[in-house]
Length: 146
Image (cartoon, rainbow, N blue to C red; front, side, top):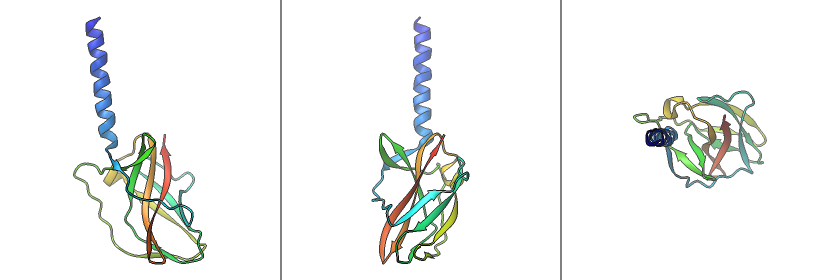
């Protein structure tokens, strides 16, 4: 009986340690996400564990700009946390400034496999910054990996 209990305890510990390190949950997000003026949503049937196409829509009557940089966050205990990059991987971005006129939308593909690896089951969001009338805002597109 003691051997069985020891085996169960060992396997449980291994499962907990493996589960925690696979998602690399970082600190709680410091970003205040705005969702009413500019939205970002996953395009239907584009989501995989390593990439997705997002539709960015300008719901304002003003033009805004955005760039290439993004990061991923994971929902953990009902709050958003920054997802840490894979060990020894860094993300590098070119720095163009794209503009999106009032009422327009654009599709943009994000492939996060190199920086974050294939995502495990969970609720995530892709976060980007936009500049609207010289004010920097953060927007996020939520998605779930099943």
